[in-house]
Length: 185
Image 1 (cartoon, rainbow, N blue to C red):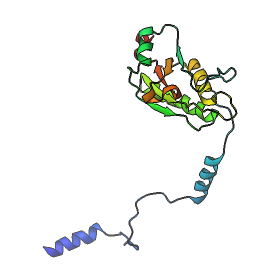
Image 2 (image 1 turned 90 degrees about the vertical axis):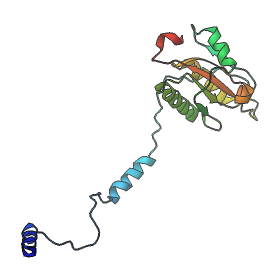
Image 3 (image 1 turned 180 degrees about the vertical axis):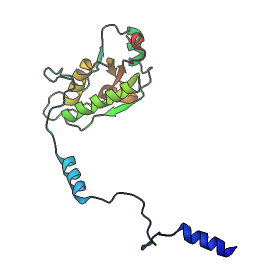
């Protein structure tokens, strides 16, 4: 009976070539060094094309470092804005723009609000800082954020935060939710 098994095995493996190395072939593609070098070079290439996001810097509303900010779109209920100002609408996301250039702050703010809109978030906090500047001029990021938020289609209103959330250096921002379109305004 053993001879039968052995002859069956021999006939089953006839024509098979033995493996000459001990490592298994996983099927993973080998690194192409030229391709990797090209990808790295392309990743470091900077495009200085301006980003088109619908926010204008043509007219920036200058605000003081300690100024309290408050704005709402037409049709937003005053009761909702009072709740926002009192910190009664919890914020579900936060963005800190401290130390960024104006262009980088703009880009991050736009991306942050787009992400919040995707997840149907009702309220976020944006920390812009007060930036008491040595040259005596108004805070740059705070002034730009104040202007940009008024232009953003998802923003229903904003107000300076309570002291525990950043005071006049941060904003509660109430956003439009697309699923509940008619109920937000």
